[in-house]
Length: 254
Length: 384
Image 1: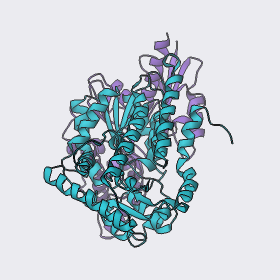
Image 2: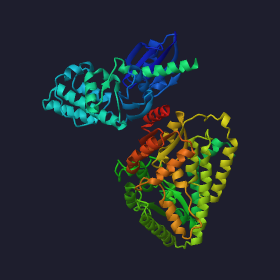
Image 3: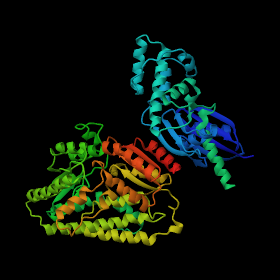
Image 4: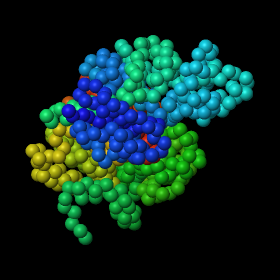
């Protein structure tokens, strides 16, 4: 039985999946920590089996794996991966570690348009990391921290200025949860406005690491005024897309 | 001297033309030939050509002098304007140095205000270009063309006759025809060369002062490319064909075009200032009133500083069909408001009327966004 291997080398994490033509049979994730080449090699060796007939890489470090048969951009891969996890979606929003993408899809699941914010850290995972650090809250406790909170208004979109704004709010005696929810809202509002440039319709798929937090999905849905869905493999959407493209490449060749 | 005979060498020699023509320019100066430095395609080059002057483009394409310019100008200004000013201020561009007179036009807001300060370093003359193409605008522009002629006569102590202007028009038309014949080779499918090579030739040609020689050289190059064209074995077969439009792109050409062509696309036509926009239309050399013909032709240019700007759409519409274009990429210089705002209309035209994929990218002369640009262009090519 043959398999396709897809690896998505992002700025924060490297994700890899094995796809057997029908489903994802195995997935792995590691933190990039400034060593994209080594982490990709690590994911590759963890997932590689003799059954792997095609390896496709994506993400900003996509050119760093010598064993790759093909490299494809994260735009195409996220779109493919998302429509595999959730057929019939009209748009994908991916909040990555260092950029944010909105992709609109045609009825066949192909990219019809996209927009990227890659000029600054505002509205990306980096903004959330900063918030977690200043508020002394591990990422997996965000949900608990914001439950029942009433958000404060965060006006700075620049990561650097927002950091000092959060510190001032703490000094004013604001609750950590209220500040956290305020920050999350500001990210989601910004992302939604940015995605609306593409005039999204139908269901929106939320991919990337933040999709695992219900509060982001809920806030995004509120600002977009469209149903937003996630999948337990949301974070792997790019890698899944890469594997699917690899599988098709294999299949076409016979 | 090594004989240049392969096409890649010819393309590279055009790429080096700006540098190579410094010596020629110096020799011409020593012979007493006046130099007129220009920024924009709206300038009727036939007028200075009529008095035997060399016309050189000063539109600055590198980020080298931007830090110096930013000491005087705002940071969030178009890089082309900052670079132009910076080159004049630092005297780093020999062509600025050689220019006896610099001529600008009231095109975009940034440029026309920059010229006020440029005049502190060099004699600057600004033509008042109307921002629309109405009959009143034409009347004003015709007066400006004549006033420009008079300015040159007074500045250089010479007389420009109508016959000299007509001769210059004929020569310029012949130059445009030779350049057009060359870039029209890209109508072939597969294209006979990469867009980056086409651009090198178009850009380099503006630094060839001997127009007769340039025309001959272009004709020979066109014949050579045609002779070597081998569609069956072309490595460029099957590439999606891209039209590039937007701001003047000199300084960012390389990174955007390279990002497109490295990822499997093929630029077949440039609608920008250095491409079809400035070369497409001729001047009627036999018109009863030659100044009227010049004014009409130049006012017709479809730049986003015009409102409305139907000629840009008209030209793009024709180029998209003639060059069998599969997708349109718009390159906008940072803080170039007119092109940036107009991009919505261009997107609507391309995706709505022509049913083609469109993307716009905003960039500057730095290399800091090369990675992001590459991803964006690669994703766009994957989408086509």
